[in-house]
Length: 166
Image 1 (tube, one colour):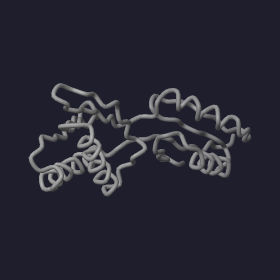
Image 2 (spheres, rainbow, N blue to C red; image 1 turned 60 degrees about the horizontal axis):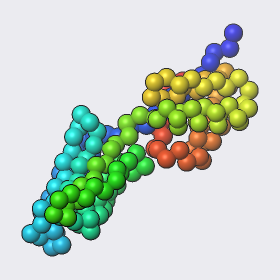
Image 3 (cartoon, one colour; image 1 turned 180 degrees about the horizontal axis):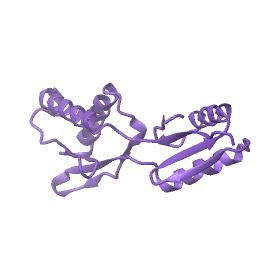
């Protein structure tokens, strides 16, 4: 019997890097001229996997979000895994926004990925959805390489990590 080779497809964000980026963004906001005399806040909730932004108005909220994104990009945090929520208008013109951090492949996206891989019609390639990741198995390593190349070429709106290649 032939030995099956496999790899896992997953996604995630290093929460420590997000924490560092938020701290850098807070320091920059405290020293920037356009934020002087304003009440703008960034709060990172590690358990919930969210960053909450709050500013005096929608314009400053947008600027605050841009500062956060630049710090995250500098720390190599995948920006595709950010899910910014709607801007909420509060009292006295204050604006709030919650940015969720995607730590897992959404179920609909996993199903779409599995359908796309099966549509390739590669011989004996099997796909299993295991919780928040996918496992792709095949007796041929070349078929697995083709699947990896295919998944890298498609845009699933999340950053994909390929691991446990055996």
